Image 1 (cartoon, rainbow, N blue to C red):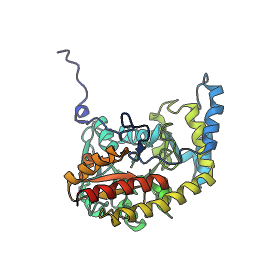
Image 2: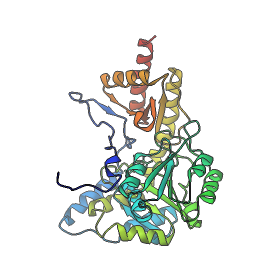
Image 3: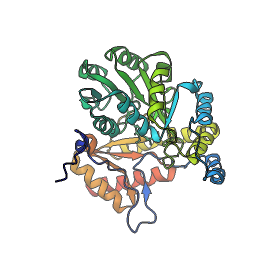
Length: 361
Ligand code: PMP
């Protein structure tokens, strides 16, 4: 015994298991498990990344000024109210570090993204889980779970892994209803895929207690670069900026993200293809007896009769060289989350699921 022990709560953190990335011996494996952009990043982002190689000996920007300016321009937001992180994961971490400690509560929904729990526990705070209704965020249940100790309320809209979303009125009711002194965090990792949704930008613009999170990992195809950002009241952004330290983002990551956010033609193409193939995939699965909730994201949550059938289908798909995501850890053991790929990927996974269903009679 060394007497060296971590802070309370740390050993309650379950190790994160990410989407499987390959199948041994399968060169043709199709990865539909991490909601990545099937078209990869914008070629302009790749070019910016190449150019940044000449500057690898230099420390990167400390203030992320060029990236914040580009995001501000594209989204019509004040760059001084933006904070950038190593993925939106890191901003979730900063929020918990900055605002929640021992004795404080961090509220999120039943099937909520796993980083909310990890970051709450890492900060020494107590995670509190609110039930959902029909696999969607339930505002009343979330508000009922809040107490005077609540410091942060996280929802993803659209949600992961369900793909469901709540509308503007429900969001405003949530912002109005969270306790005094608590921050509502609208995680918009999948916001762009929801037609006509601003990710919570207007709410974050006008309220003192709302922070919006966004990422370059999904629509922008830059999961490997690890860039996310948050938008909120100046006072909160100031706190997060103090915590983030001087050099959290690398030069190549900043350069790639800036080029990516400016390439609106590429974004428009990816969004159009996602909408088209998402509808196609949901319909193709339904025609094969596998229902899903209407998805506003870049994945579909396929529902099976029970956990056993979902497990069997997962194994069948692996045999066919297709990797999807089991979501038992999110309390949905009877479901498989399938990223919307390009047309050939969607056809391949729908075909394999059809064969699975036929084989089972
Ligand atoms: N929020 C949600 C809801 C997510 O699904 C993810 C990625 N799985 C993230 C945040 C974090 O994304 P990143 O750290 O890559 O920006």
